Length: 301
Image (cartoon, rainbow, N blue to C red; front, side, top):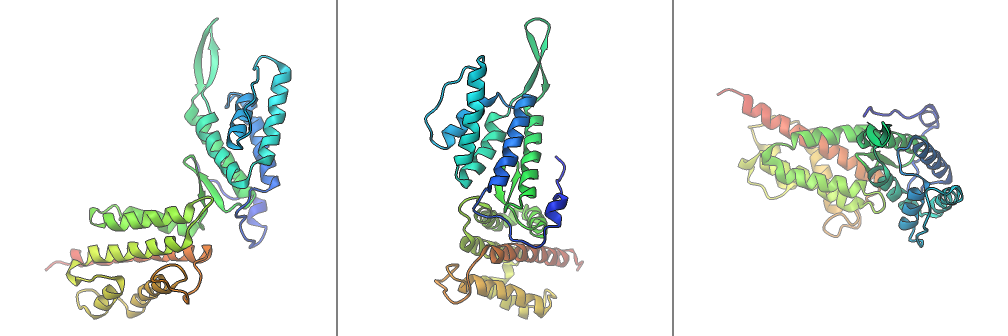
């Protein structure tokens, strides 16, 4: 699947806050247009299936439709439109995931009198649905993205790039503990309806701490604070003091941020912007520590 770029209207709307905790009416209309297209292409079973799924998500009583009766098909379309309009914003995102995973289907074409063959497999249909949903999310400046069949909280491209690079270097078996912490941090940040920014910060910093302890076992340190002191004093690694200060600063916020660690109440709130900044910085720090350790190992003696 190709990476979608934000459309012109989104790129030139200015630095406005992304739409969070909402799926606005204009986005619902865009989603309804997509449902019409999917039904016309045969990418979903039809309006009865769409209506029943929307009714299920919104916990409305199910309605029986006959797929061979035109009045029932018209009613299913009307019911689907009304149900989509009444869903809470979180339920709309639930429906987007179900549209991709449950309602999508193979497209069949007839062979002979009673045979069929798959002309478009479900996997290709899902690629189309995923790209079109992501296009709507970008057009509406939503604070979420649709990837791999799931809705995730959207980070800035730089953050996503750094997180991806960090996850690559965390493939080292020594860094299994760090990888676990960083994965949890991403999950806390990306949760579509209940993001936990405090725990995101805590787990991201724990990932740096776990990486440092695994990469530099000779330091025999218990905390990231201890590790920064060791890095400042050791002759084995040439790390600029100013960079060590950045690690100290992240550890200080993890210890003193509101609700982040040690009951801190004076370090400032862990907002979405703060959590994203910490995610990016911690990813960069992990990558840097891995690079430093690798350069040291490559030095011939």
